[in-house]
Length: 366
Ligand SMILES: Nc1nc2c(ncn2[C@@H]2O[C@H](COP(=O)(O)OP(=O)(O)OP(=O)(O)O)[C@@H](O)[C@H]2O)c(=O)[nH]1
Ligand SMILES: [Mg+2]
Image (cartoon, rainbow, N blue to C red):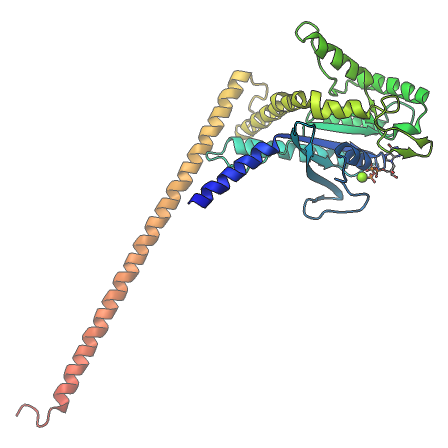
């Protein structure tokens, strides 16, 4: 008993120590420097280089492998810890439709898990929320704007995850090329109305510092990533802001904007998905159902769905109870049958014994 209690205490301590949970997905064309960036961000080798597979965590899906890896990082001297999950989506080629479906599928599955957990009667204490809070979209350093496939992918991903565009291997561009490329990319994002995460702020409501900080970060987009200290052009200081926006993006992800990204994921992206999913399943149940429901209807739908599930679970329990009762009754019948068989055998043995007594008696009953 006390050892169980101890185990519980230890587990609780571990949870406290684990602290903040955050999940970053990296996505982009093959060779844009995703792996190198992740390892530099974490200060250790979290992702292996090309072709190194981790069969335990690989979700094999028609050639696209999506692999989450979790690391514990100490963020500062005060010992603030973060449990950082990195989800790598292996570099894509030109099968954009396939890639988009697999990545969106992965994002939605994490939402489905939460949705299922929320409606469970008894919650699973070990449930782990694996929703992705931010996706860094690595743009190939071409010196131009977005390619068509970037536009298509970002458009399809942004309804499900906070997308932050970054230029990978930015040191392969000259400062002038980089500045021009950043401008063209932002123009494309605006023109194609891609809802990227743009460090939202409200001049009226937010305090001055927040407004200033967010405006500055927004001005850096897309972030120029140079994660490799040694390049063909010589030594680049990864952390030198004149060479790359690495420090800016790291501090935004792990410090200043972590909470905001998590909030938007839960309150907006997940909520939208949930609404879509629930209204779809209601539509499916009533053919010809109206898909343009108002929020109140949706709320009562959601309550109804939960009640329905409760009722189903109750029914299931009742069925189990009946089945057990039936089995007990059957066993009792069997037992009674055995008992009567036994009694018959006893009676027969007694009869046989008395018969042989009679026949053995000398002279009989004369
Ligand atoms: N110049 C420069 N080269 C880099 C940078 N980051 C990575 N590289 C190099 O680019 C190549 C690909 O880097 P990776 O980090 O493996 O790229 P990836 O996107 O993970 O590639 P795949 O997983 O193969 O799709 C390697 O040879 C790296 O050394 C960078 O910031 N600047
Ligand atoms: Mg890689």
